[in-house]
Length: 172
Image (cartoon, rainbow, N blue to C red; front, side, top):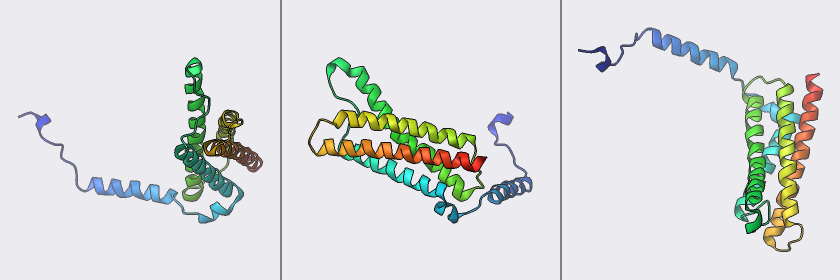
């Protein structure tokens, strides 16, 4: 018979020891520091996440756009929509892992975090500006929600810039 038809035999003494060692290494590196949430950086991350969730709720509930719909600028409309959605999504994709890093791992502020914050700020400024430009001349509930979403995205960009400045101050 071929060896390919039989499952490989594992040494029952080695696997649990290696597994326990791996679990021990991971657990030794994980800490639970709830106090990090009340620091300036932790509080800013919580605000950034909250603002992004509110923007997502407004976007979904009111079916908001980031450009005017017309057949002459269909490609531009798609580009504008992608910029806006990516801006909101990037807020969560940047802030959530950094917040988890503060709470569960020993985390030190560094250049990479500053670059993440600057990227998120520029994306939120772009998306918020597109939303404000789209809904500035309209007067209905969806337009008010679009203006609110744009304003919240610009405020979130300001939070990211403050976060980048505090990270730069702490990294020196």
